[in-house]
Length: 414
DNA sequence: TCTGGGGTCCTAGGACCC
DNA sequence: TCTGGGGTCCTAGGACCC
Image (cartoon, rainbow, N blue to C red; front, side, top):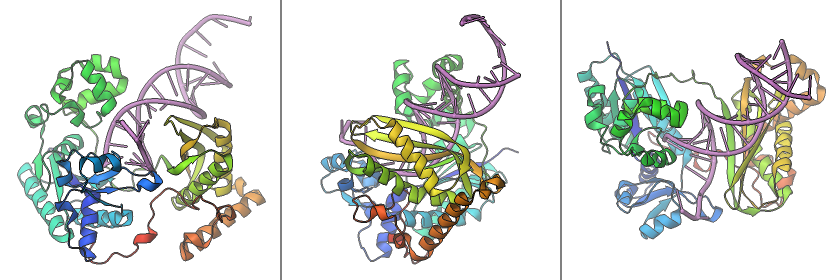
């Protein structure tokens, strides 16, 4: 029996979810029917297009471009801010429906899932896909594309065909006809850099890539070259991984500053504010960190990073933030700073830590303090307890991560 | 291309060990 | 002081994804 895999992809996810939320809260305009985008706040230099409606595609608006540029293309463009907590709820509601069709579901991102549907035949698979697509539309109000194949890669490529609200198949024997004529940049894992390099080798379609000598591609792109060669021929052996079986390799937060910072202390404060959202996330996940790294982007857009491996794994806010600030002092070249980030890697499980760590009474006290702070903030809100350094400071006490508190009210079925 | 934020994996070079 | 090879870990940067 062959495997049957679905890839479910929400059409213009952020935009559709914003549109539904608006409709449920008394607005009469459906954002999906007009040129509209979900975008950041240009005032704080977060102004790029995160998602676009189908009508806005006609103006050539692309995800990732600046709001300024998008407005040049379409002056009447409607711009709405992201509502991350709404997206999380919408995503959960969709997965609940998907679970009625299969116990084996992999959430690939907030708006994409793989489903193992191997209990079905090819014919009944299409029926099931139509059924779940229509149920999501009727019960939740947004549309999805469903891609069907015998593996994840081809299912994902299939869901990317004509949109919205479609079911497509892409079985191995359909690859030459349905996938090979597409431009090579439509291939999963072929981004802009690789597209440019491939163009110089006269490879412009996925078919060209499939027909190129895998040894040649390996020579040029190493392991990655061999991988995209396989992908172009429809070869991929990955399996659907159930939730909870994938462990987190690292976590990080970063933020673009509202203006370029030129002094050390303000940068340290930004790092602290990032830590105030990042380290509690780490503790929530029950992990300890071995390696701390920081990332700096200068006003001229060049970036630097530096990492350091601690002598022991930790989840203490003050200890990890001290490490981040030290790294900053070591790497910063006095250039104006546009963007700052911290990330943690080499995560360890908390329950297998060295018990001797707690024999250090200072460490134990700091650990207890972190726990109390987490608890107070959880019960009384993040702003109930902030670092003294942020009082009367232009730097926000918390940076990065998903800001949920503005959107705690969600009624109806989403 | 005046370009957000959260992730993953790969590579190449160096340190250090046997 | 120079010469090897293999293994592991660390580090900085770069590619890709959503």
